[in-house]
Image (cartoon, rainbow, N blue to C red; front, side, top):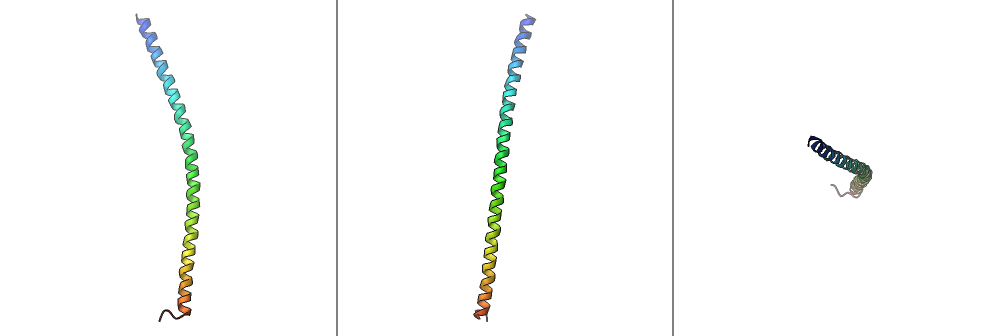
Length: 77
């Protein structure tokens, strides 16, 4: 009787260990995919930051240009 119970418990533990092994493999694969997605997201954010910098530069130069135009045409008195 004890041998049967021990054998059953060993089989049950083996199934659990194998199940955990499969789950760990899936988690590792998902982690690798997530790392790639995060890297791509960082590159995309860097591009957006560059675009914002250029846009801010254009807006500032436009405002400065407007002030020079306004001063030359005596809009400010």
